[in-house]
Length: 135
Image (cartoon, rainbow, N blue to C red; front, side, top):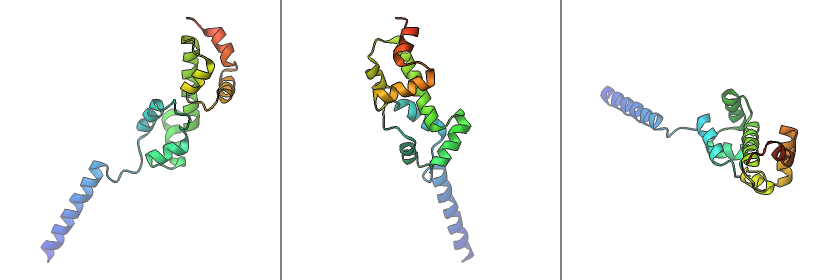
């Protein structure tokens, strides 16, 4: 009887280790994986904190803590910063229309893009392009 109990215990511990090592019980993604996903899907205007939480099985508060620890920014601030920086680059390196740039950077409307851009740069997208355009 004692041998059966030890054998069951051993088998149980091996199974637990196998699940642990293979990530089967994994419930949250590392921040690096989430950051990579954001960059790859920046154009998607439906990219939101709630969709990240759903996709990576993490609570909003945990995601926020992890983001601030890794980047110094909240998830929303991080996404907006990436979008604004991409827009800046597009404005000065291409002749694309501002509406097209707003869509390619993941903004839901040109108005919202212009408002966010102006709040971050203290210039409208048109003013920014006129000042820094170099092609």
